Image (cartoon, rainbow, N blue to C red; front, side, top):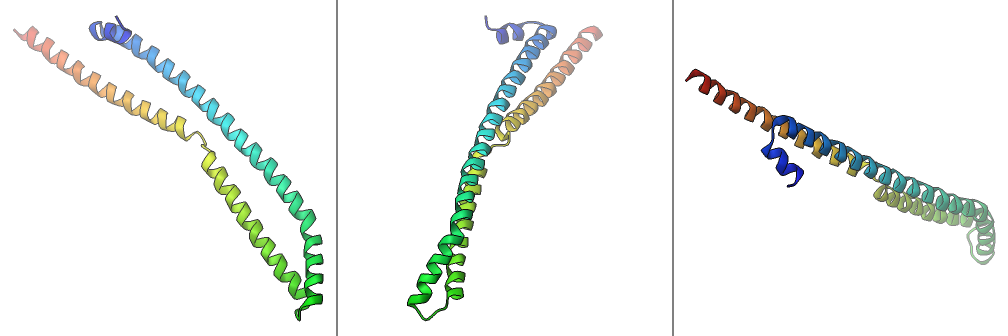
Amino acid sequence: MHETEAASSGTWKDQAKVLAGDVVRAVQLRRELAELEVRHDANAVRRLAIVGGVGALLAITGLPVYIICAAQGLAARTSLGFVSWALILASLLVAVGVLALAVAVARFRSEFSGLRRTLSELNEDMIWLQEWGVRRDSSNNADADHDQAAADR
């Protein structure tokens, strides 16, 4: 016979023991889930830091050289001056950089769970425990009414 079936046919004390065991197991599982989520989030943060850091370093070191060279070459071939071309090129590169940063942040947000699953599961458990307590109280009241009616006879 399964624990739950044994508890349903046993006393309230037996049912409380089974419930306590179930709650302990549920808490253990939630703790394991939280550990997995924290590890996943730490990996996502680490990946963002590494990739973002490398990208930022490359952009910071290469952009000034690129902008100056491109602006000088374009100024020699067109009617716009060096400063105008430098501003145009810098603006384009800044726009691409902001777009890349926005994509990286959006990906990070989608991967970062922040214990959402664990908190959701804990909320569901609390609701279940509250409902179980209400059912238990109402059945205790029904048993007490039955006992009182039997005593009155």
